[in-house]
Amino acid sequence: MLSNHTHERLAALGLAGMAKAFDDQQRQPDVTALTFEQRLGLMIDREATERENKRLIVRLKFASLRQTAIVEDVDLRAPRGIDRAFFAKLVDGDWIGRKQNLLITGPTGVGKSWIACALGHKACRDNRSVLYHRLPRLFEALALARGDGRYARLLKTLSRVDLLILDDWGLAPLTGEQRRDLLEVVDDRHQRGSTIITSQVPIENWHEVIADPTIADAVLDRLVHNAHRLALKGDSMRKITAQRAILDATKKT
Image: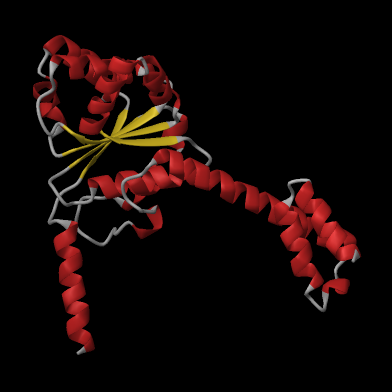
């Protein structure tokens, strides 16, 4: 009865992790070998872990990452031009703390979006706020927000996250409205947060994508000059994965 009462009181106080740890301890026959401080420490550790896991779930839901990717699964064996030491620094995340950007370029299928989402997931695990957008969809959202009065609020949300991921940059030349929206987003985030951009278009051709020399200079001055670059190359990872699956299946037969 006393155990049930303790569990209920812990739960009522919002200490669900401690309540679970308390129940686990009650089911362990050797729990009496632990001191009070040890048992309390285990309960506090469980509570801290439970709370951090809940916060991570909230951050990941807000981030809306396109790919379910983690940095531990990034394939560094494939010849894609990924330097291990450089990638380790990206995973460390110090560049996000310094408000620097990352520009990932390369042909279709080499894993640009996957790597961006993996780094976004790691940033969430590091207690940073992250938000993912495909750039064409973001332009659509900004156009709708302008029409229904949410434009300023959406820009504010984009400006405040620690890491903004803009995927599929440069699929088509920008319209006048899109150029102005892009400048607003980039200017709001300059030296306030980090941005990852993925693109099939080489960086030296981004002026042509923006299609206005003045705005292009302003946007790229804020994006490129304090950015790390990851230029991927090689065959499509989808093709490589399929070939490995066929090879593995052949070995098993």
